[in-house]
Length: 216
Image 1: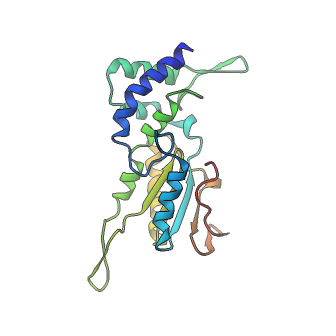
Image 2: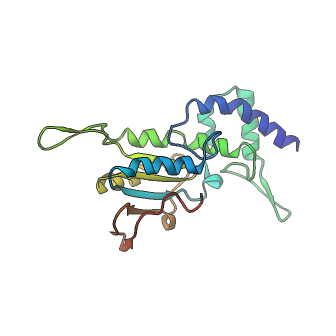
């Protein structure tokens, strides 16, 4: 009980600081935000024009987050960082057997969702910034709003763009970005679809994208 109270105390101190920085299209485990908000955001993006969609899931997100990477992102007093490191490294008891925790956040911990969001912070903007805001057409004019839309809810996210090649590039860039966090995409829950038609992807016929994600 004391440990959970301490986690809640640290969370209440860190959360306002990080809420001021978190990306605008990140919705999971954030005050005043919900899955319905994420759905509305997706609807807004696809309402005016059909899009390809990378519907993706991060494999064992809470279990695999790299501790060193997470701790390096924590911008807080050193004594607070030491306490958080102790929570990360405290280990777990499984059927009376102690197991060390070399990665991941505390199972069921009050502070775990916030720590996961901190670890994943930057994914949306870093990937979007790999693409120009406007792209020059063959006739010399510019197509505005070329960057992909990325909507994340905890460890699930959707990438939307009208160009299939952009979606493929995003998938590869995201896989590379996640490696530094100790994470990877879950193949069986990651697919490319289209908002209006069936498409062929990885030898499979993918039907109309189901938005938002199964877990929400």
